[in-house]
Image (cartoon, rainbow, N blue to C red; front, side):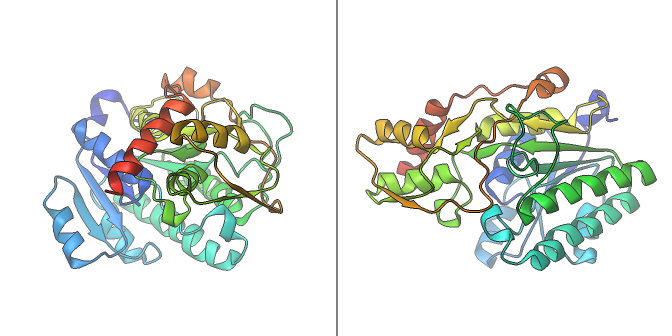
Length: 318
């Protein structure tokens, strides 16, 4: 595995580095001296020119185009795979698209990484979907994996192919099964996460749609804690290849809304809708292994993270 003295020299590729988690990761990596290349979908000429003025190298292309991906991977030792073209809520609508854009694209990337001599793939998997309906909580890495949405199935399939490439080609990898991410930079208009959507609507006096009665419990993780885990993963030299990254604390949607009401200083109107078939009743990750192997633990409590996110939403709306 990658040694600490070599890791500081490693060039990092962030697939999907223009997204919510990717931008925070890139800033953290460059702050620590890592050379960073980002692979993203083509953007406007003005945004491309703005990005080119920074210290990060930006390359653009199609994730399912193997030539584009091979060019992005070339010369990079560490590959962070953050790309996903679907969300849990829409992945079941078109599983074929999910397979073609996520799984097939990833296989092309693995071939490119193997051919170019990349030293490690760090894959952002989904701690909230790969386990399915939990048999016990908190959920450890040894819990059965029975996802009930295409999004989780594809994440799990990618994990399996990473293990296959490790066995066949000695391509090192580390899977981080992330809890529900939130924080500054999470766009409410793309419905990437409940926290951003809920807070945006709460600040604008709009009602919030809740699937079910609000008793569904999730593990919410602030973005700075997630990025801390990513950075530690670069230098990880242990033997484990799948690690949960979560707060190990569960909060119901009702609890979440109550905390938001305290922050915005008003009651939030709720609109209750039928529970969706892919929503599990509870998901809380056991992050004991992350503490033992990465020396990592979640440090930002939910209410503090929500307060930071509220400040950012207010500033960005000015």
